[in-house]
Length: 67
Length: 226
Image (cartoon, rainbow over all chains, first blue to last red; front, side):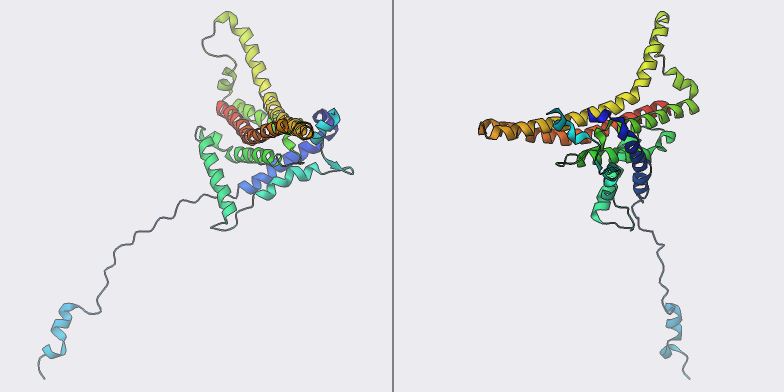
């Protein structure tokens, strides 16, 4: 049975050790499993109106005291 | 006839150069390294498969045992890919070599046993005596348990070697028979060919199952010892 020919055993074992313990592990340790990206909840920003309604109401041109 | 039949199990050397090294290292080419955030289909599929296997295997282990995750996933992928590649015609299957399987089984088994001895000495020694044995039976049972412990790596290696070798041999024999029968009686050749197809399907299953069994048993020995 050719599997029992021990002359080739050293080469096979060394190649296997190299492969299994180094090469393949180098491939698999790069696998990353990040968590699925979830959307960030934003605070609802109140959009400031360019002018205050009250200010506009008082200071609109037609409402100013007549010069 | 004998010489011809076993010739596919001779470690391949070409003019004195051991090509067996290249054959053993070939499966690394089939697992590309992921380099992007979103990878291509092949890498994503392999990552998905690795995650599936890892979740299944590592669930039963303690955190100490989970440090072996990389080792176990590499083991199952290596054995699985090597076995499947060996089903191609005229290819050499490294897992038919007893040398390689012994080289895989003994260090891994020894690693689990030594881990058990270092971290849980009393508990791992307690494995030698099952609970509730009657006192007169104790010496005999300790001997039996020791033998069964030391036979674990041998069984791992020989199981893998014998299964894959036997499958390949059967395929050679039945294929040769089908070929020889064509000129004698085509109907019998057809039946033999159908048997060959069924056998090939079995061999695909065996290739994967053997990888799984090997890894599962190593993981079990690990679980006992962590």
